[in-house]
Amino acid sequence: MWTPLALSLRVAGLATLLATLLGILIAALLAKRRNLLANLFAVGVNLPLVLPPTVLGYYLLVVLGARSPLGAWLESLGIPLVFTWQGAVIAASIVALPLVVQSTKAAIEGVDPSLRDVARTLGRSEASIFLSVTLPLAWRGLLAGSMLAFSRALGEFGATLMIAGNIPGRTQTLSIAIYDATQAGNLQAANQMALLLTIVAVLFLLGMRYLGQALAEARPRG
Amino acid sequence: MRCGVVVLAALIGSCAGPQQPPPLTIAAAASLAPVFDELGAIFEELTGAEVVFSYGATGSLAEQIRNGAPFDAFASAEALHVDELIAEGLLVDDTRTVFALGKLVLVPAPGAGLELKSVADLTDPSTQTVAIANPAHAPYGVAAIQALQRAGVEPQVRPKLVYGESVQQTGQLVLSGNASAGLLSATTALSLDLRGLELPQELYDPILHVAAIHVNTPHRELAIRFVDFLGSPEAQIVFERLGLLIPER
Image 1 (cartoon, rainbow over the protein chains, first blue to last red):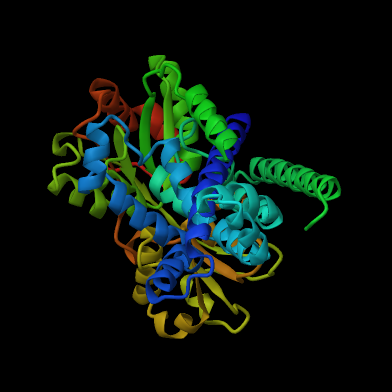
Image 2: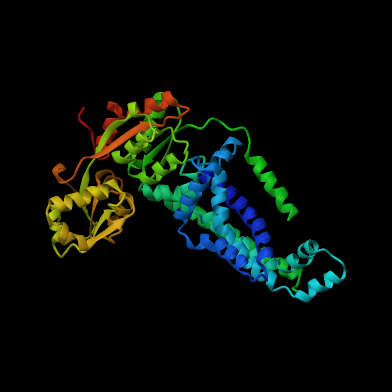
């Protein structure tokens, strides 16, 4: 029960970081862009919300697996992703990414453009304006996005099962261990683990709410 | 953001410590979980080696093996996928072993008050829904359809059928009373404490349970020992107790 929990926290934590960093980048690129290419890209980023996770996991397995050129190349570098916990991080990041992108993009678009114009008159570069003006003002959306991302990553099951497998001690996250116990008819173990996962999620989400409220008091908006 | 990168690097660093060689890892059909959990403990005692099982739907496990999953051997609840993987050169033909046969049982939901003496009783209006495993990919689902066809009641029972994704999920449909009755593997029924009627073997084709080792296993000897162990008297006692038949040699 504790090994799968540790693995789940590690996978969800890293996936949240990856999805948040990548999500900020994508949100910054997509914000206020209305051309066809940007729209197509935005739709692509959102696809993991639409596809059933098992199907997504199957595609990832085919793209990153030993039979694909990419998978073979990664393996030759000594970093095989499929059937490792790192593979689980990739799966969880991809399913969590659209949640970060959506809420961060909305928050960035909500920042008063005149503030950026002021920064421009001071001769600041666009990158510097984004990091020191836009992003700090968009923190609420970013925080909400990463909270959603962590929750989604912690509960991630279908894609992870496919790409990382259900290998106890190596890739069996808590969500997969619960599924495994249910399948084996071991309902008592499944209930205990489901309770544990629920407690962890409730504690985390409560903690994040308090953090958000404390931040809001420390730094009133605008 | 820079802080995030530092944390990320630290986390990855802390996780990539010196790695122990992985234990013997066996991919096994999910329907075998109650049996293999017990067999694993006996095997560990006999050999002193650690063994872990990765349970899943046979089709998914086969697909994972094709994409490089690090399994040392594969134990399936049907022969098709094992034979395909042997033909593809991923499993070793010489080690192919039929180690058990599945039994199909007819189980009424607890508290449903149904008295089922044969498959034909499922046509009675008192049975509203009949749960079977999805015949598109679950071996016990295929056997269930055969049993209905050979008993000549398939057309009448067909509208009552609901599918579980696996035979375990099908068992839960029955256990929870969401289906009036189900056609399950004897192993699943036993693991869920469901009592049922064993169906005559003529009603369905033998449900072969087949194992073979992976061509690239780093634990070749131990993997062969495990497959041999599945045919041993110690293992057979467990199979029989948990609802499987021993194949004739």
